[in-house]
Image (cartoon, rainbow, N blue to C red; front, side, top):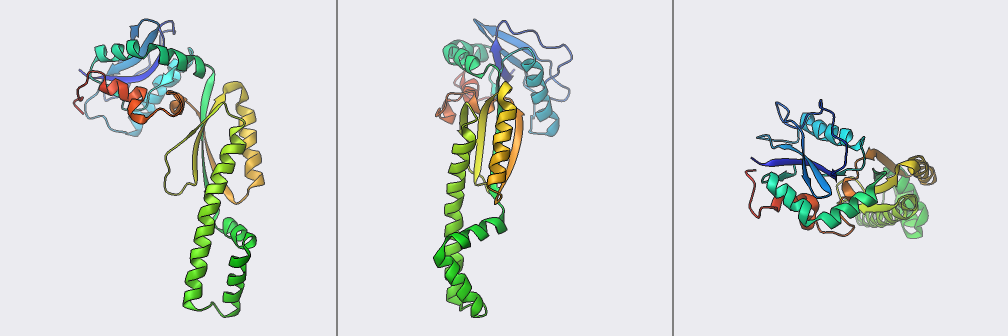
Amino acid sequence: MSTYVYGITHTSHPSLPEDVDGVGDPPRPVRVLRQGELAAIVSDDPEELRPKRRDLLAHQRVLDAAGEGGVVLPIRFASISPDDSAVTSVLAERADHLLERLRVLDGKTEYNLKASHDEEGVLRLVVAGNDEIGSLARANREAGGGAPEDKVRLGEMVAGAVQAREAADAELLHQEVGTAAEAVSVGPPSTGWLANLSFLIDRSSAEQFLAAVEHFRRQHPHLELRVNGPLPPYSFVDAPGQHAEGSTAEAFKAAAHQPTNR
């Protein structure tokens, strides 16, 4: 039977409470696999696992319960290994890396910050900060809207300026808020966001980080910021710059060099 992996910790980590259930319906009992100095928190893999709220919350509850006893490397939802032996093989093969990440992430948490533009606010900045755009916009207004080609030209100029502003604001956010973090991970681009950043924060410094975000928000009212956290440090389980195919989660899936049933 395939093995579902929740997280990695030290062998000396305290046992989980008996009432902590894993994913699946009915919930699969959570157990621990040990290999050397490392331990994997796992359960049997339920059939037909899907990213439903029930199972997402169960995955999170297991990590929350484990985190109360010490540092845990969280593994992303639906990380399935062929069997228990494959899991312990990864623990053995990646022991140095996993122990190093446990050391780095001890006492740390993750905050995710997504940013987007307030449309009216950024348009005001773009027009005020670009003489050519401002002049053409005024000329079009005075001409009762302007000729079709002038409207098109203005729209293209505004779109280009907004795109440039998105890149500049994303970099500014990274630089200014990132100074309050121990590490920053840039998430994949997504529609609707000009920046998707995850910050590794010492738990004792969380208030200072949130204050830095609020200060940035006040200084740049044309930006809309959404903060999510504290979270398990999913974005920092692997060393910065490590390719996805070489990630710890992928290693569990590929450990036996054969596909799972999923």
